[in-house]
Length: 281
Image (cartoon, rainbow, N blue to C red):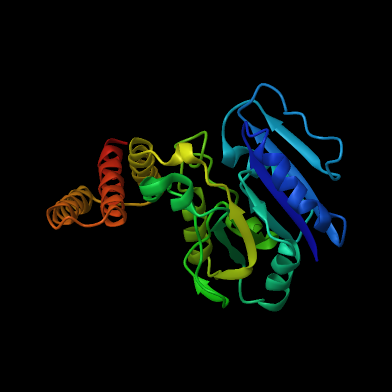
């Protein structure tokens, strides 16, 4: 089985080398290739000379999905692995990905396990719920799930070829989010199944600057607007979602719920408001 690892990156000169270093021992074995897909910068960033053999793509225009689609077109792997640039992989990560696809033929896509590299509360204190880290931890067993998560996901190349590339209206550099959600929906509509692979483990950086309530709400609202680009929701449905979200947040506030519950309800309301924003097209 040949595996292509695609890392879409934008202006992370410190984080990207750490990820490449964590992958390097496994890239020296098996039939594996690494593609660095950089977007939204005037020129490619410089990488250390000790970096493993890799292909490099660069696109000055912003757009994660655009550069990922270019990488897909050039990848030669039967399995396409996508990793965000602000994490590191656990030892044996690629072995785990390949074992998953080799032994679980019923699945066309993989949602990998994502844990925080550090304890969020120790790192940022009570604002930890506002970090909005893409954590994925469904336990230690392989199970079927509804969708992938963009930070750590993989697909059989044949499945991507059948359903088509990422929607370039979505994701960072475009509307901001929802590209993996839309892809997951398309896969399921085509009859493909998605599995969670607990041994395909990565650790996500804990960046204190992300622990910001305004940022958290802004991103959630952007997510709601993105959702309206690829899902059909009537005005009545969106208005109802907003009413429910407002009520839930108010109840949480009146009952003096903890910050985790408050943050969760604020996110729900921001998404609903973003969907309302999207009603106008």
